[in-house]
Length: 164
Ligand SMILES: [Zn+2]
Ligand SMILES: [Zn+2]
Image 1: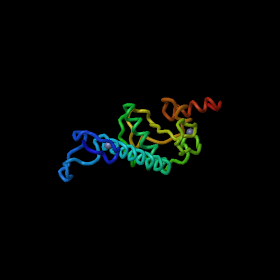
Image 2: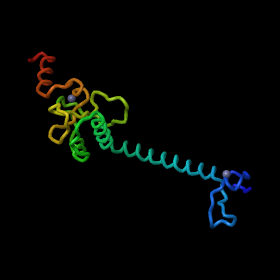
Image 3: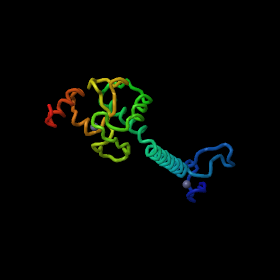
Image 4: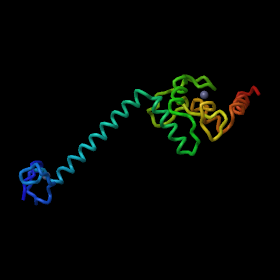
């Protein structure tokens, strides 16, 4: 039997890990306690990493938007031929929606997209994303645009406005 310095319980030697440097050949903290310490460190690390990440996301909303947008498009089986860096550059230059002029709200922390949330759009509505066919429009326009080309969408808007 051996005393665990951590939990203060006497346990069988077999409950302790071996260590040649210790007098009796076992470390003086039981395996259960060691596993618990490891788990706590792991959880603490995870919390710390998550906190760091969410702080970073708050300070860099465009990076967050770009990485989740690219991820979503890959998951939805789009051919993503635009790099993170290229899309960041587009995002950096996207202040207003190029279709309606609405100021884009890059505070994308909220779960629900608003009509002025930024949204990735393919000008040609093909299955591939590349630097030439990708731009960022407001969520409202993207939903309204449906799967039309820009020209079709503008025609539609004219009809809505009664000017066609
Ligand atoms: Zn113990
Ligand atoms: Zn718009």
